[in-house]
Image (cartoon, rainbow, N blue to C red; front, side, top):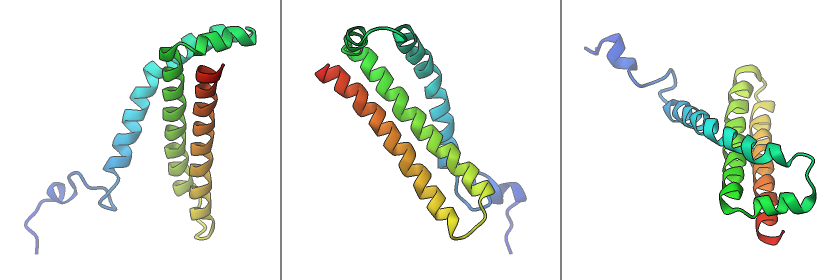
Length: 126
């Protein structure tokens, strides 16, 4: 017999006694995306329609390149976490669930890394 109250038993614990890390990571990623998105739009929107040399010159500024790379990495990580929640909630097949989770996570990480590589290549090689 336990003498804990209902609140004491569940305080800080979800139904599976985990999940705080995922919740916290999602909130931190969301807050980080606010300034990163604003800076990303300020840096990239003026480059629409510009020629190649202008874009290369813009991304050779280290601050701009780092902000764009951070935006891509945080955005795709946030996307992967969000898709995981959707898949866990709505995919009920025992065989397809792990396949869908691994596939979406790998695709998000691949596209984030590919974007970061493209920006780094422009920044360093021109």
